[in-house]
Amino acid sequence: MATVETGNASNLDMAGGEKAIQGTDPDVQPVPAQEAEGDDHGTTDFRPWQQLPVFFAMGLGVFILGLARLQDDTIVGTATPTLTNEFHALTDIGWYGSAYRLTACSTQFLFGKLYEQFRVKWVLVIAVTILEIGSIVSATAPSSAAFIIGRAIAGCGASGILNGVLIAISYTVPLRWRPICNSTVGGLECIAMIVAPVIGGTLTTYVTWRWCFWINLPVGGFTMAVIILLFKNPEKQRVADKPFLAKFKRLNIVNLLVFTGSIVCLLLALQWGGTTYSWSSGRVIALLVVAAVSFGGFVAFEVLRKDDATIPRSVILNRTAGLCLVYAFCSSAAVNVIDYFLPIWFQAIKGATAARSGQMLLPSIIGLSVAAISSGFIVSAIGYYTPLMLLGSMMMAIGFGFLTAFTPTTGRPEWIGWQVMFSIGLGLAFPQPWSAIQTALDAKDIPIGMAAVGFSIALGAAISISVSQNIFTNLLQQGLSNVPGLDIADIINQGATNFLDNVPASERGRVVDIYNSAVTRTFWTCVAVVCVGMVAALCMKWNSVKGDKK
Image (tube, rainbow, N blue to C red; front, side, top):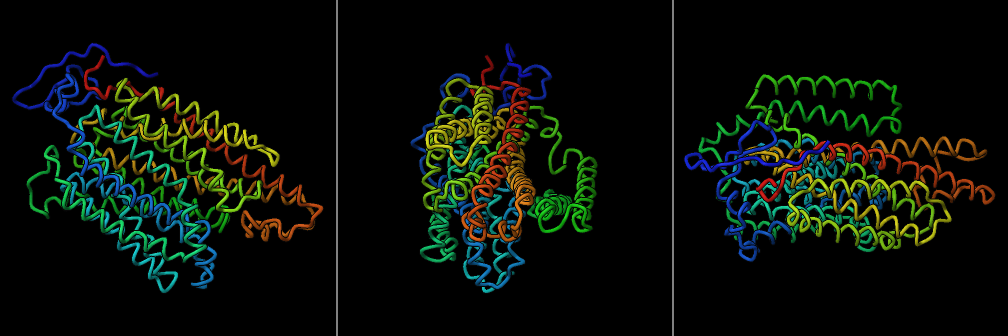
């Protein structure tokens, strides 16, 4: 169960320049003296208006990341038929969406090590540049293979942007004010994931799918100009004064490549298992075996390197930090299932168009944005993030639970009300792991801790989409197999808006009920992972962002 830290005596070590907190609690880490003074006594020199250029640059970075997610959601949805027609490569459909997710997930720790060894400003600029290069390759792709390569490059860049933004905030903003910045960034990220399919569908329908990528260029160029000209490298960031080659060796490239290989094999197995190939097929089994063996090799290398490991023991063995990773994974898994299947329910069951479906998602967008931004002010005021994690998890579990009861006759008050319920819970909960990880870890471990949270979020999204898609497809196939005279493969391949085209009029009501059951039963995945996240939050320690443990 959660415990509140009370009565910890402390003294200021003038020689070391850090506030040493007495005791042996591994979750209590030393805080830089300058920061501790401001947070404990409220006399910090931090002036938010002087940091407006920094916040502006960071906001643009998050906007770029939102556009990248827009492109990924668009490819998985409305743009896929257009792409397959233009490139004549129907067999590459699975790679259009997975190429981005694979690289975005597998390069998280590489960027974490880069932010640990080099200045945050220039690593962030490099990440935005890589994303821009990937966008150009995708927009100008003459073939399906070139397009997939562009998506993979963009995923590499995207994995370093959000971490860079939050790491820059951790070095620039005092601990007490970071929840406000973190929650705003988290809120923007969640909102982008929800509204992305609508914007992308509009561009694909009325202009061309290539504009989903060209739109990155002016925004990305302006973002890099603002970062280079206005954002100064934080003075608090301590980077070792060593030659470039010495820093490069500390990146653990070989071990990171082994880890990347294990994640790629795992995600490919989840992507193909039960859909492209059966779970008992040699390809899927081989991928799972390679993933397990390579991950075991990664762990063995980590143990041998001890303090020089990719993920230091101070992060892995930290109770609060480890539970933050579990919570981030669960929250991301839940929101991505909803992001994927709730629009399908609106379009397939309620008969809404893509544009109308976007309007029907407005309750989620409004509730999420208000709650996410407000949560930062609440945490800064009360000092603790755990209550918001627990409250948010309970609201998400209730909201997702009622989504499982939706039927074709569910009215507007129900689907609006339960959207508001789970979106407010999501807004309260989703940004908190970023704040929690900064209270639990020493300053030198924050970059890799941030990368670990980003990895958990990316992995949760990738796994949940693959698993939920398998659950949905299997449930739909089982249900349709009981209806005589149907071509099940044809109905599934028709998509959410056209699945009734070849269904006899006498059977359409029954097929709609089966489709509705397959979609709504998939929402049980959200309930399950949110409950696991709630248990993780209950087991965390109550560290205060105010610095003074009361």
